Image 1 (cartoon, rainbow, N blue to C red):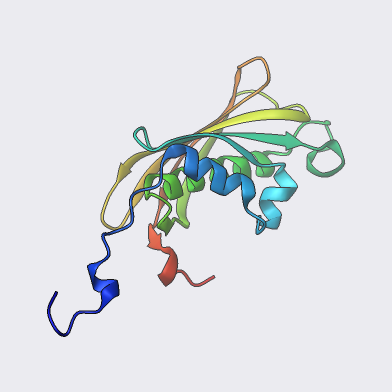
Image 2 (cartoon, rainbow, N blue to C red):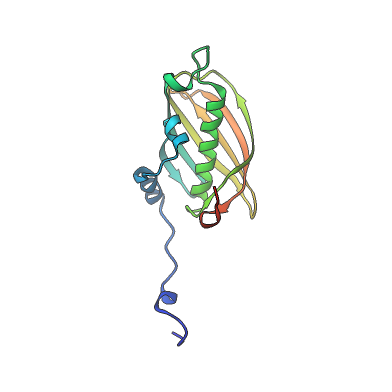
Length: 161
C-alpha cells in the first residue's frame, strides 16, 4: 500500500447483490412510497440476469374503481410504471432510480378489483436511457394491459426528488 493510501482504499469493491438479497431488501423496506402502498404493491420475484421483476398489486375497491366498478385506467398505468421502474432498479443492481420520461399504454380488458400480477422488464439499458416493458394480468393469467416506456437511469446519490 502506498504511503498516501488509507486502509479504506485497500477494501475490495462490494460484491453485487444476489436476486434473493434484492428481494429481501424490498421486503424489509420501511420507507415504502405512498403510491406503492395505495396500489397494494408487493414484489414477488427478481431476476437480474433477465432484468425483470414480478410484482403483485391489490386493487382495493374503495380506492381504485371507476363508475363501472372496474379499476380505473390511470391506476393501471401507475401499476405498469411501478413494474417498469422497479425493473430498472433491479437491472442496475440497486444503484439507480429511473424516472419515466415517456410511457405508452394499451388496455386489453377491464381489470376487476382484487389481485393483479405485474411483470416489468428492461429491454435495453443504455448510457442515458433505459427502454422498458410492463404487463398486468388478472388472477386467471389473462393480459389486462401492456406498456412500453423510456426511463432516465440516475444514480441514487445524484437523484433529487
